[in-house]
Image (cartoon, rainbow, N blue to C red; front, side):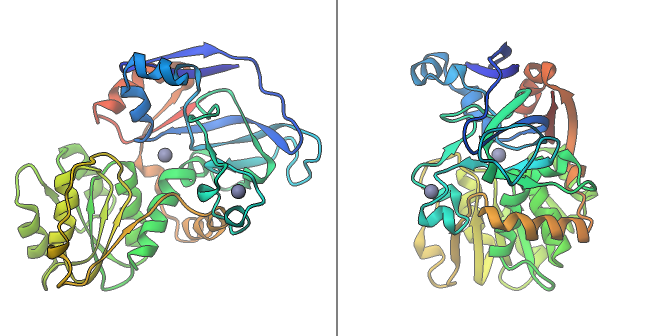
Length: 341
Ligand SMILES: [Zn+2]
Ligand SMILES: [Zn+2]
């Protein structure tokens, strides 16, 4: 099969690999849609020396997949060849307390695709039967793939921010996760102000229903957000950019008793001062993908509310063209990108 690799220094190429064979309890899925995620860029941008020292230069990236079951190993009864499935983000032991509670992202033995094991930017993906989530016929492969990372992450954060009518939410960073957050927040009844520095992202956010947008390169964010929200700030902030100045700004724009959810890795520079949120009694939270059982309510909400998550996709390209589109994605010139083998 073909698979994408990142040799380092912003290089990407397609290489040939042996087809995976499913062992006991394992499944091989023929990929029909694999999204590029902002977090893939950490490996893409890493130096060639660091990639090869880690042995990562021969690992296929990609952790947002959907496809069709291609082969099943012994002992697999939950799926069969031909089933449409979305594939959960981490393989894990399946029997510890965290796994049994659905929180496979906290399993001590978790293995992320594109980390220690091959990911989904390939023709085929080897996973466990328990990672295969049923994808109904009326849900596209693109949607299934998007729910596995960007969609699930945004939904969980909006639940934590208590998005609903009469809530005003500031979204920092209008890349794919920020835009998905915008769509969920609006569908839950909240009003949204979007903040970014890229004009085309601000435009897309407006088209997708943002009540207001701010270009933080041109305006004082704290002033502009408070002018829009009234009171002493928004009820919730969603930080997706990972930029230190945005992390600081979330605390400045969130009003008394409000909540802030952070999902953007990135800067490790100190950015938040407790004295700025103690008096306001803010709740600051991290949010990290989603427990596997939340797939069902998320999918149900998206289908019943007809949330157009696919509208954040700007490019759907053949796997063979991944190297070119990755360069554009890296420059921030695209929205969500989907690779199709
Ligand atoms: Zn992702
Ligand atoms: Zn476990």
